[in-house]
Length: 168
Image (cartoon, rainbow, N blue to C red):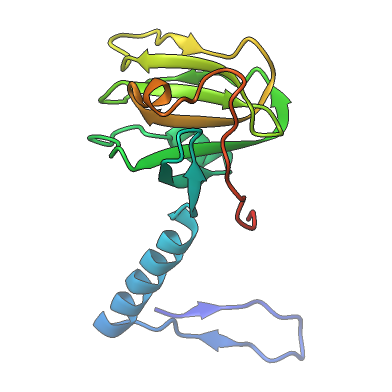
């Protein structure tokens, strides 16, 4: 296959033959997979609950990451959580579409103080899915295994501790 670039009179016509073959295809596929993995993997940071328990917490920064959340995952281990970071404090709503297990949803203000907890939120059973939101503006949302917020003393007024990674 040849592709030609148009050029004005008295100019050189350039002939380009794209690389082909199994090695080129394999290199292209590997490069694409590596690039997708590099951008699709969220940062994981330690998050300390009021009880002192430390969770390995995935950080969701982009709209795409926040929209996906825990969708399609089979479970959330007790030593893991998910942290959603928002650019502005607001009444950030969460739904349970395509989630397979109940969770606790904890909203935090900019100082990482708990402003609202929705305990044992069930997966969405049918459309339209219920939407859960805080009574006060929040800057962060943390998703935990169902019942974990109460067990680990993550109640309104308590503080969670974490250091944000460099944001992409």
